[in-house]
Amino acid sequence: MISWHVTQASSYAADVDSLILQIALIVGAFFLAAEFILVWLVFKFRARPGVKARYITGEKTSETKWVSYPHYLVLVFDIIIVVAALRGGERPVSLSRVTRRSPSPAGPPPRQSRPGADSRS
Image 1 (cartoon, rainbow, N blue to C red):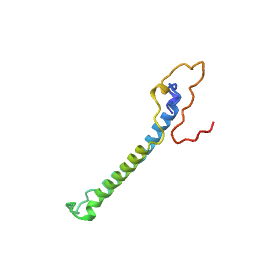
Image 2: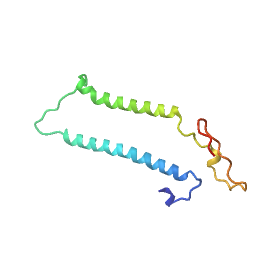
Image 3: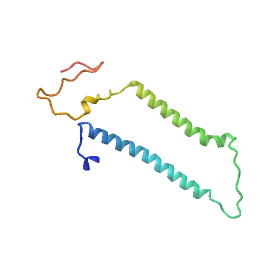
Image 4: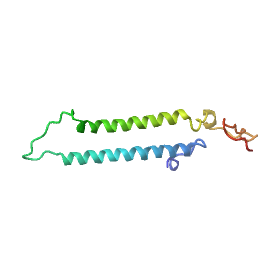
């Protein structure tokens, strides 16, 4: 999407743009869901004439679950992210391969095999 406005400075620019768009869509969906729930709760529990407000202390289990369950969900997602990061996945690209250079007359450098990859040519 950004390629409509700017020329790509590296061969990885399209991948980076795609990743940024994916992150924006995921975060945007959760943001819109949270805002929808907020607006819905504001209208549902608005002040009404003749109805006295209740004071909720938050000491009952049925009341604490509204804080505890989302907290546990965030912790589970954090653990998943840490485990995925520790497993490694694809190695980050070195900065020298990302920067803009003129092509070498000898062609691109030979690919280095990753540990554990089969050695087919």
